[in-house]
Length: 98
Image: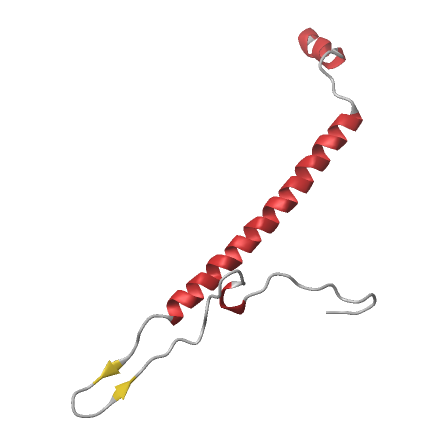
């Protein structure tokens, strides 16, 4: 019990409140940036998956009659969002609701 009392009153190694606030702010802002990057990459992967699934060739031909030619409709243009998915949402004007 005496040891716990001495440890509680010990002032060595304490950190100021300003340093803790700065540390927590850096951690919070860093995690926000990380989560935004994670969101963008997840959307990218979903778009790539959609394009890949759309490019599966389901064309067929039966001798003596029926045939079907499958044409993909989604594209994955260079330097643009995959399959037309866009994570950049413009801000709403003040007072507008979703």
